[in-house]
Length: 277
Image (cartoon, rainbow, N blue to C red; front, side, top):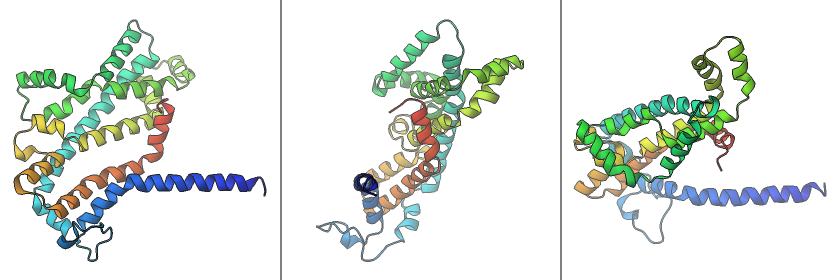
């Protein structure tokens, strides 16, 4: 019992600090949720009032008429689904070839991949825009999802580290049984890489769902706007209806939070298995 008491106290203190920091990082979302339920007279009170005296749930159905939410939701879902499908198709293929197939030039190519990963988006933004403009795709959603089918350096790096951690005996057994390299990849290695794939998928969903700069650059027709761009556009044109904006922001943020908790275990395993800290 004497030995356990210091351990119990240590665990209690650790969980207490984790709870405090967790609430600190959760506070912006809680404030957004609180604002979405407040009546007008409680918006700018000082000191701030976290719990509204009268919960205005009507702000959520009103948010659908505040701007074309369902239309923008459909556009966002389309772009997110295509971009996620693209990285899940292309990145594991490249990562597997760099990690498990010994071919001449694989190491320099991986080094080039790391160099590209270090380049900020602002450096390549204008050249990529010129390419898509010459192809006639500016004004469509194609530039927002097509590049995903050609791989993403960070996801290739993450999945390469994952593939390198798998036992070599598995692919040797497949080769002994006469399996081709593509079959070994598809039927043996890829299913074992599920945590890494879920991690990459979650990163891409978050990136495409919350992307503002990409749609701002390439989309000009309001009918093609995404949720983030549509919300910003309507704020500029019609002024700030704070309760409706916060209600819309809660509805935009909630799917990402739910998705994270659904794949949380696989996400953490994918990060730790790949060697990232």
